Image 1 (tube, rainbow over the protein chains, first blue to last red):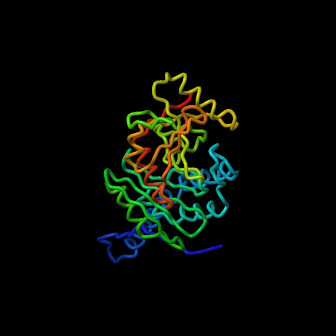
Image 2: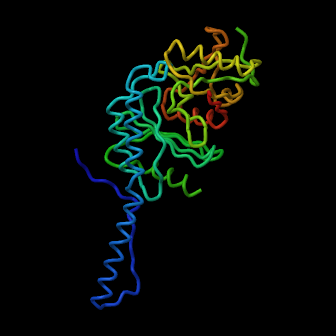
Image 3: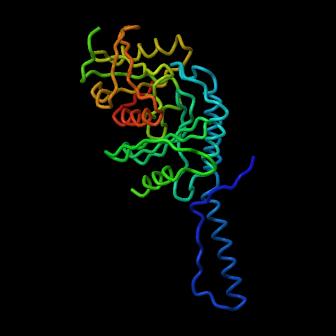
Length: 165
Length: 125
């Protein structure tokens, strides 16, 4: 399976006051290459892989019925695939990797938290639907949206809101 | 069955490590999410010493062949404030269920977040 990946946070690089000489153009190109390389290290590096591994481990722990001892439904491979897809679509430069957890109904939950009452969570169950809820101080939100090839704008807006606070 | 009073303490026993946030030792919202039967199992632990509260937890975990990782405590008033009901059935003794969860996942998640924000996690040593 393949598909385009959204990039909400790819850097716009502007190198000002570059002269027209061959040397200065070459210097600008080198600088841009270096910045892009470092940017990719930060935004698409180790933490993403670590979170993917955490999701796979979670799936292994939760793919049997009653995995929580309270009668939970198993997490499905469809939920796993959708959670991994969701990670790929996150605006990585402005949003850190989430913590992962399993829902008793078999969905996979992703959680971003900056304080006790500053939390945003989403869940997916392999049904092309994202459920979300948030606690922003005294403000509470929740909803659901279609999840196809891109992240719903409401999810992105809430994530950005959490990290702008 | 006596009604649960708003100032009573309730304990939710945690049998899954992924429901505990190890970075700051707090409970994750999924610990309170309802089971497929629409209920969240809790125990009324008011008036018990720590030893007695943990004994109930072991009685929950052992027959299920699960490890007891900890418990999340909260007062009943927080549950009522979130719009849920508490149905005490005393089977086993002190047992109750959080009920009246909405059907939509996102609404359940919002309520579970609210409960989590006021819960206190106690880790089992």
